Length: 375
Ligand SMILES: Cc1ncc(COP(=O)(O)O)c(C=O)c1O
Image 1 (cartoon, rainbow, N blue to C red):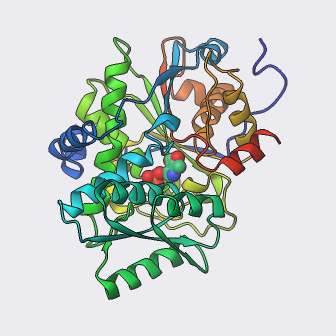
Image 2 (image 1 turned 90 degrees about the vertical axis):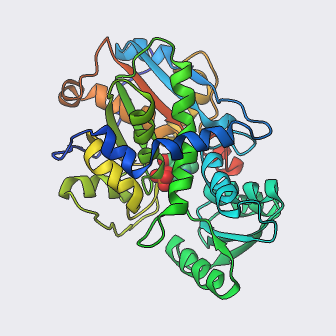
C-alpha cells in the first residue's frame, strides 16, 4: 500500500494501561450529571449559527490499518471559532452571567478557551478581559481582541497569566470563567465540560448503527477527555476502549494514571501541541478519568506537521481536512498503536474496530498552520 509503507516509523514515547480501570456510569455521572449535560445541549443547540460539525471517515487509513472504520469529528467547522473549545467557554459565560448585562468576565488562556470566552461575552454584550502569557502568539491574541476583548499580556507562562487573572479579577470584581478547576472553583469548569459533551451527543446521532469500539482523546488538563467520557456514560450503550493521548513533554494524565493520584509535570519544553501542553490534570476531569480511561499514550512532536499535511491532502480519507496541531495526535497514536504489534493486540485493534478520533481544531492559528504544512 501507499500511505504507510514508505518506511516511516510513527513514534510514540510511552504506552500504559490503567491498573485502576473500572468504568462506572453512575460514578461518572455524579461528577458531571445527566442534567448538566442535557442543559448544555438544550442551550447550545439554540444558539445562532449552531449546526453539528461533520463526522468524517478516514476510509483510506482504515483500509490500510485493517480496521472497520475510523471516524473523525471535524471541529474545524465549530461556529466561526474552528475548535471544540467554542462549546465550553462561551457556554460557561452564559451560565455564570444569568442574563446580567453588567458583568465583566475574565480568563487566562493559551488561546482557544479565551477565544470562546470572548466570543461568548460578545454574544451576550458583556465586557471581557483576557490574560495571556508571553508565549501565546500575537495571532492568537489578535483573534481575541478582534472579538472585542481587552487582551493583557503577562510575563512568564500560562500559570503566571492565571495568577495575574485571579489577582486583577479579585481587585476589580470581574467574574473568572476558567476551564481549569481547583479546590473551591469547580462549577465553572464543569460548565465548560458540559458544553464539550455536545460533541458526543452529535456523534451518537451521526454514527447510525455503528458501535464505537475505541475512542482516542487528546488531553491538556483533561477537560475535553473527561467531558467525552461523561458523554459516553450519558449517551452510549457500550463502553469503548478509551485512550488518552498527550505530548510526551506534558503527559500529566498518563503520569497521574500511572500512580493513581494527581502528579504535576515540570514542563521542560513546550510542545507544538500547544493547547495540550499542560502540567497538571484538572480536578473535575480527574475524578472522571482516574478510573474510566483504559490506556494512556504519549507522543513526541515529530509527526505532527506530517500528519497535518496528510490530513490536508485527503490522503487518509476522501475529504481534505484542515487539522491544527492538536488534531494530529489522535491519528498519530492510532497509527503508532497499529504498527506496534503488542499494543495493537492489547487494545484489540482489528477488522471489527470502529475508532473515533477527535479533530479538535482547524487552523486556529493560520500562520502556524501554514508554517507547519509547508515544512
Ligand atoms: C485546541 C486545544 N486546546 C486544548 C486541548 C486540551 O483540552 P483540555 O485542556 O480540556 O484537556 C485540546 C485538545 O485536547 C485542543 O485541541
